[in-house]
Length: 282
Ligand code: GUN
Image (cartoon, rainbow, N blue to C red):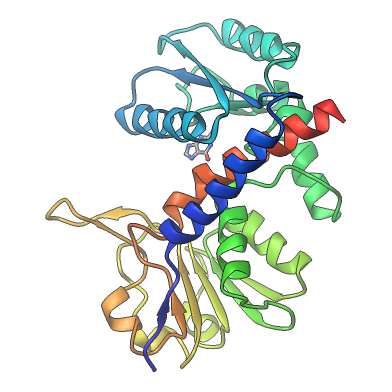
């Protein structure tokens, strides 16, 4: 079998053009507004934030960046979040993680109004997701679901094996797959025999952060492989958790790295901001 590629670039472009159209159609009613807060000068965070600003502008979404020094007092940051909570021109608030050691991520996330939490990190939104209520869904796993929908890959009754249990990807993607009636197994760094589970998977979500470790002997013929890994090889190039060249002979669908799940994250941030703007005006 030769796997069909699921191109995140293609799925993201399709969704972004639809978001842009809807933003234009709402122009007389509301301009969606996104506030991004960046603390310190971590180069990776700065680059992500730049990507978010650029994508917002392209979609016609207003975005506002607040930069704060790495030693900013926690209370100053919390007050900025509260200010955005009360600002009617802002429908989505995103505080770029990670934060410096002296600032509690938990406190920051819990200060963001759940109704403006377009990252879907607030415990209220996580609880709503777990109970099947309307919620902001975290962008990376939500983007994975869009890739599956785009390719008409039904997850109902399928065995999905999630490798990784982070709050941002592993845990929520398992819950989203469960909400769509998959049977879900979580594996992680302490799983005794990962292959025993991955070989049984119809769908594998690889979010372990370990370079190219999933090879043909980890999967069954025809498995769907979604690679959330973003690792650097010794030569500086990017690679996923899956060995793409090896797996493409055995999987039915596979996402590349780069150009797979990556472009979906910002896309779903735009989507969530648009949904929030619509809710705040209805
Ligand atoms: N850092 C890495 N990914 C993310 C994300 O999706 N949202 C936020 N706020 N910070 C991040």
